[in-house]
Amino acid sequence: MSAAESHAAPYIEAQQAQASALPAVGVAALDHSRSEALQLLGERGLPTQRDEDWKYTSIKAITRTRFTPAAPSVECSKEMVDASSIENLDSWRLVFADGFYQPEHSTLDGLPEGIRLAGLGEVLKTDPDSVTKHIGSAMGEMPHGFAAMNSAFVGDGALIEIAPGVELDKPIELVFLSGCSGEGFLSLPRNLITLGTGSRASVIERHLSCAEDRTLSNALTEIILEEDASLDYCCVQDQAERTFHVGGLFARVAGSARLKATTATVGRAWVRNDARVNLDAKGAAASLDGAYLAFGRCHVDNHTHISHNAPECTSRECYKGVLGDRGHAVFHGRIVVQPDAQKTDSEQSNQNLLLSADAEIDTKPQLEIYADDVKCAHGATVGQLDEAALFYLVSRGIEREAARRMLTQAFAAEVLETIEPAALQDYLSAKVSGQLSPAAPTEAAR
Image 1 (cartoon, rainbow, N blue to C red):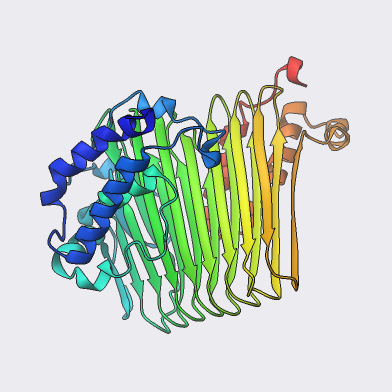
Image 2: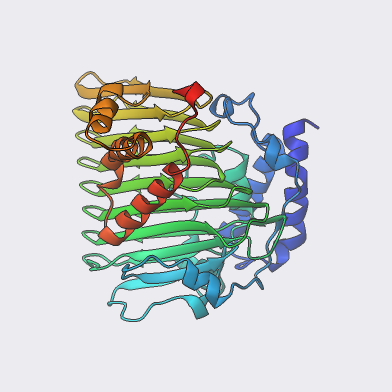
């Protein structure tokens, strides 16, 4: 048995022990997909640095601990939930403790007609046929062992279904609190978001730590947009230093539909994000944006893949990172233009600001073009603060450290200023400011 397979063995054993208690056992489609995912996990194991997509991201820190899947009986306190609130944010809210739905802490009052907003686990128990056809459909081929692990344990998470033509006037907020079970636990939330033809919605997915315990969060979200639907989706990762977070976003976008997906990593956790978007019909559009901070010994890895599968589709991608101390970040953005995807319009950018001589970024923007009538561009930059701009601010009486914070926040603002609503933007700006305050480089790094 290889090291990758042996690291996966405890989770295979845990799934087999829990299999009979998972929701919707006996539903053929879900039984098959869970079994297939478990088999794949056994064959492939957890990723290692020998895998090209994990070349710069080691999971040794994760495999040193055997994490135990959290139990459905887990609870979180009202104080934890209240502490997670964003000031002035008006939203419908679903709260999860270690991946399990907490209806007593959720707010669903005033939902309009045509929306189903619920815990996935409860729907799997009461109406499994309505959702099992969608589970796994946006993912396609599983990219790695963590995705297979999540798929083998499918049990709870958020279900958002929006009927054709429905337009929401405020966002849906999904709050995932990790560490509720204590030290050494694993959460495996699975989220499913579907928007019918012509519908409009905004979803905020937030991952937070309720304690400083060592935990692993393996979260996966699938998004299916039908024709002319529009979704603004923002995933915020703001977890504690001893947390490991593996996130996956998988989306299928139909003709004339639009997906705007933003990932903001503003905590201190070890983070790996995968985003895979398929533009499947004429006129589909996707915008993938990201802002990430890496300070201390923080590690943040963003892997994105946009596939243009039809003509006249548009994609925009802008990821910006700020790294200090011994922070390490990885960006690999891949855009594939298939042979039939003529008149594709695609742009990709990754920009990084290093505030320390010890900070490190590995960046690889990538275009694969198999059509001849396209408009595509990509690029990456890595640099330090503009000394001329810094001198200008200092010469106007601003302290050097304050001037550095101002310039750094202005660098990140290109992504943050596109986020709505304003309450969420203010929350993220404050998080960035808080991270930057102690992050002024030493004299040796200047």
